[in-house]
Image (cartoon, rainbow, N blue to C red; front, side):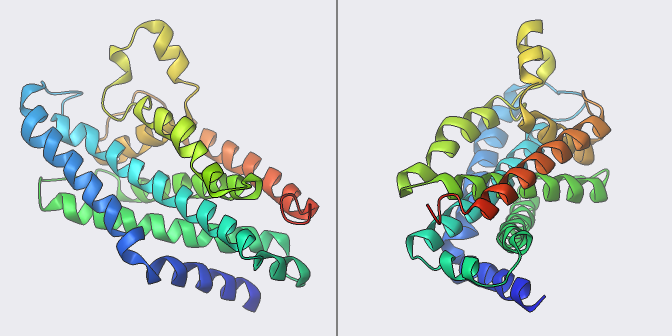
Length: 251
């Protein structure tokens, strides 16, 4: 397992070396969100699901920082390794493909967990935050970070330029986040758009984390966990297949 440990250590050292770029910006972004919604908007919005507006949106904002940190870590790291040709060293070594996947994803998940903790700590200085189910909160953060670490790795395999790395965040992740029940309850939408929203995987991540914080959920928690595990399984299977084929590396 020395090879897996070495790759994991390299990934962790990479984002820790530039912590001002990898850990600090998400915290600043969420603090600004909280400042705007708490000071300027929160007092003008009535209680939602029995909690204040700031308590309602905080789990969604926290999930947003986790998603972006996780995706950016694997997508940029894997593509940079391709760009420098250093990824070829892994493929000519006897290292198993699943270890390559785990090594890259572990670094992304750890970065996301650190970002989540820093965001929570910063928010605690601004407003009082309660967690109803801390274990469930950790589970949803972990599963969501893993899912988007896999998505970032998938994008890194296909990307042929640095511009390709920004396509998924711009045209997929950002729209899904803003339509994923972060800033509003799904119950206020017309029936048609409520149905459409159920096809958004980020909805289930936000729902699960919100339930862990405030104990309110519009969707069964086990359904949310099952959907996350389904997407994780599918992406893992696809990525392992692409790694074995050497897609984007040997071609």
